[in-house]
Image 1 (cartoon, rainbow, N blue to C red):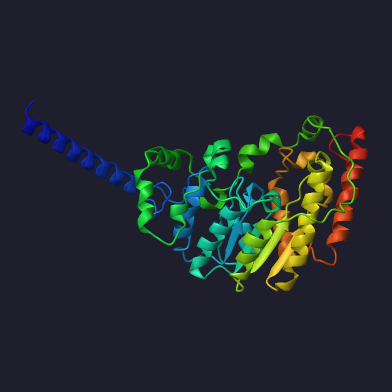
Image 2: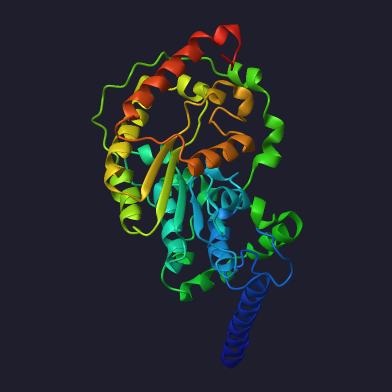
Length: 363
């Protein structure tokens, strides 16, 4: 091949690559399974499950275009993924709810979701479930290499949540877009149940005895006395989110984890979580737009039939009870009653341990 022929071949090859790349990005734009750039041109009210960190960016954009959305946003973990937007609208007499919970999120991821949803100035109510992520000793950032190594499916697309729209087009270069479009067509869920895992996990419920017997290394709990822990996620993430939006009303709650969940904890783990509870209850006293709730002293937490696993994932009925309680103002946790709440919980956990031999998972 002559030198000129080689140049022509290289130029042709390069041009073909550009054309193919542009064609691929055009197809990705047309399909747009996460509905980042436009509402779906192929299916209505279908959203991609199991890729919430991408899909939620599209949800924020698309749902806020609707006339009935939104004055409420749900921020949190898998423990609020079964919260149905229509149920919250009814309980709080709202006019639209953004469901933005994530499975196993960092506090920083949750704060980013809240900040992005709040850009419209229409959000007036924030329902936020908290627990383990808030008790971390460090503020972990999205896409921390150690986190991605342990949980590679938790990559967070920061570029979809920043202030620039130009870098959003990076998503179009993903070869995964056609596969996610097929997911949207075949397995996509309507918005109302997009986040909910309860239907698929229902078969794991009502197996309290089996669940309880899988781990009976219980530790009798003492009333925590160590209050020297540091909670940077409260100081650097949650409180700034609250103070940045005084126009919003925050409903923050501790999920009703099972007593078994606490029974198998070490004393150190239990003490740290309770110390975090005390700090949060005291710190938010100065903010009139924040209400804190605790539901893990409910009687239903003694029955493992209400849970699908030892991580405390509860039934949809309990989810609805949480919503009803917060809307009615029941279960408030304040600086004045937080220590009594901890004493009740500690007593209940120890009673669960003492009575386990007479019926695993039940008092």
